[in-house]
Figure: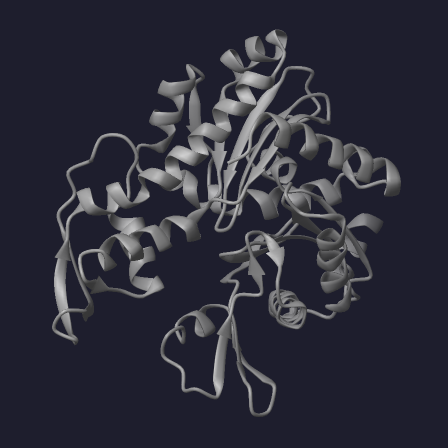
Length: 360
């Protein structure tokens, strides 16, 4: 009963502060907010005018005195004030329907984050009004959110493909056996589509590129989707026009990014001990994050690695869901939370080890 009362007035919040989207999860209530990680502000007054979906819709459409920014780039904070505002407003929006004390909040961090960047995430969350803050490796949170038993002695592998980074981790006995974080994700794929069409003298914006990725993007064999009519600028005629984009063009544009993710997965698999490799043949690879939804990607990874590969249920929310469950479980929280110098040395050694074996 005491736990129920405490969770009502001071909830446990898992936060996926992602490059593309910020997801807020409350243990016991599920995902309560999922919004694009975008902030718009007026440079004349230095006032925040929009966040989330409404700010994203303003991209490319604002007058010179306004800016639309993404406060996170490649998984780390690039604009502290905007990140703090984004977190504070989304948490307030999520919990505005009931009286409460300040929540306990846990945020995920990518493996490529430096100690300074980890502290920046923690400070942004604390400044947003949380009474207790900590962070957890993004890949571990993704694994817990995907339903993997991270306390099992049998090794398991998760590949979390987010907007700015892809986290590749092999987990076992409540620890990370191997970890690689590469700065390739959905944003890279979007920009590749923009560049591919620009080479054909047709210019599109980031929102159109994202739509093409979602509706026509694929890995491996083309699924046979119909062409998509999109609007943009004809660079030769110097005027707006509409044109049809074939799925083959989108697939070609995405090839490099997918291949770099594939090489990262192979590099991690090549580095694991034989007994771990044996476990993975049975436990498989679990894909999370928005990139997991790319048509055919699970089949391509499974085919090239000889390891069964599946997409997690609701892959977009796995990181936030897993972070919230870790915070709400005293045993997992104690085993996985950062312990000052010990955590720092352990996490750095993992990153250094993977940089030596794979440099994307």
